[in-house]
Image (cartoon, rainbow, N blue to C red):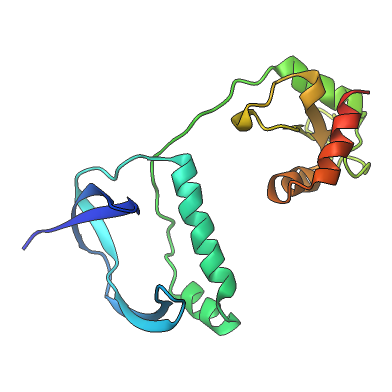
Length: 185
């Protein structure tokens, strides 16, 4: 008997994936229901044997991953340890469709030279040097390009990797104001 898989990536939207087969033994685990209460479910690990896994936009894959992280953070240490021990040994793969902005290399280099090896947010020295000896700093757009920001000197700063990640995770208004001042120096 053939089994065909359809994926639900958005409410009332289903995408045909292809014919599948059982990849390993089914197992039972506890997962939250729609109200967050624990329930027993059976998991059937599947592998696509015909067809093509649909290409999804990167933003949609990121959104699905963020939801999974949110669920994981609510689990107990024991639940996490159990799920982690049953995890895949090989990561899955998915083709993703995304947009890549063509950044002006001269704008990025200007920000790094203006910073003179110091993070323009925390003021700390670059954490290490690149193979060519230059301090390693990452360029960051104060108003992200994906949100309509310009690829200009006034919108680009040089940050240490920690501060760069901080800007993408927290987006604190005080930090944004600090960077706007630095970018205009």
